[in-house]
Amino acid sequence: MSKEPVELAEILQSIVAQAGGLELQEEMQIQNNWELVVGPQLSKIVHAASWQNKVLKVKVLQAAWKTDVYYRLTELQKKFNQVFPELKLKKMEIL
Image (cartoon, rainbow, N blue to C red):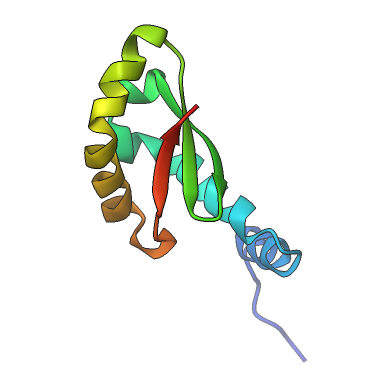
């Protein structure tokens, strides 16, 4: 009986999902693709901090940028939903 080889990423993904770590898996996906949401320049200043119950909390590293990011939240939420339509973002908050 021979089995086809399975990629390690698939095995880990399955283990995480079975262990109730679906949100962790989604958060890793967000972290790995964050630049697609905010762009290369803003990704140096704004980080995806946590993902829980379909709410994304973002950390703005420079206080001077907090107001700018606040006014861009609607735009960032739309872009997030374009990049990650399967995650169904409810809300984005600034820490």
